[in-house]
Image (tube, rainbow, N blue to C red):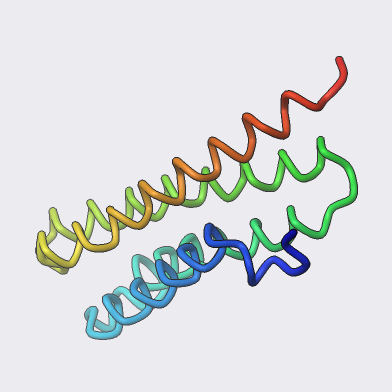
Length: 122
């Protein structure tokens, strides 16, 4: 049984995404500090933060809601990365490495929410 959110493989992958997004955005132009750099880092950090918050919630409905928010942040992060490729800030390989993790996190969050939602009474 998992006693802390840091033991969750999905949280660990989400934290890896945030780390990779931090490093991939380190050398973006200064003009992107309050645009892409900030948005990419915030959305990437939001994935693991909402998993942690969901873990700490007491009700199944609350847990499910935060895991769903985390899923949305994963899609937002993916969108920022795609934009970065389109304007030649990131390479395809940099993107693909992070995209693989994002897709794994989305898949795992879908499984968690499917399991949780089976237990919610209408």
